[in-house]
Amino acid sequence: MRVALTVTEPGPRLDALREKNGAKKPDLWGRIRYDLMDDASFDDRQAAEEHVREMQIRLARQGYAVNGRADIYRTYVIELDGSKMPDHLGWLYVGQTAKPVAERIEEHRTGRRFRHSSKVAKNFCRPRLDLADPGEYYLREDALLAESRLRVRLESLGYAVEGGQEQYQKALEESRNTCSEGDLT
Image (cartoon, rainbow, N blue to C red; front, side, top):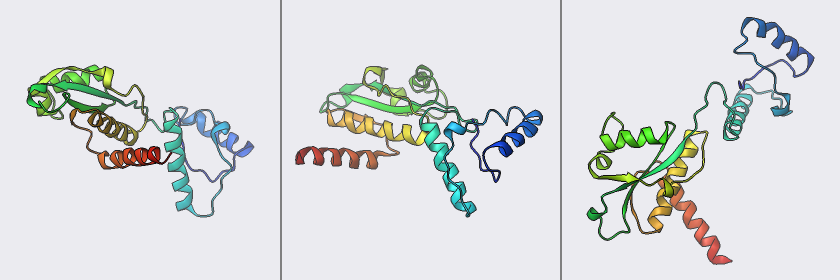
């Protein structure tokens, strides 16, 4: 699905433009999804472009492949040698990936690829997918936040946790706010 800005009003004129250009570039001009459009119009190009970005994010979060991006992110958990963290329930590593989870875990385990955790490669015990969030995320930003939320949750259970740093402060604040709201009721 392509989400873009146009100065042509939706309706017969846009349909005719799609028909004309679709013959030249069928991969770029697919079916026009009027059901996903809103009635917004703008006099200011910057405001219109911001609206397009917001619409792209909203549709991606709903699972649409927007403008050629069709990544699906998942979180994963790896158990590390807990004997090195005796004061905790265990030692875990959390991550998120758009790759198949098994492939990403194998990269960590073997230490192959430049983007792996050396702590995981040295202390790998086993995957712990039973502790991972089962959700799917269509934006990397959402996956990073889910990874950090997972870290906060596992730490609250008593685990020592590596990884999940990118959105950690935001996830920690969310957790505190949720606890505070729960205390008020």
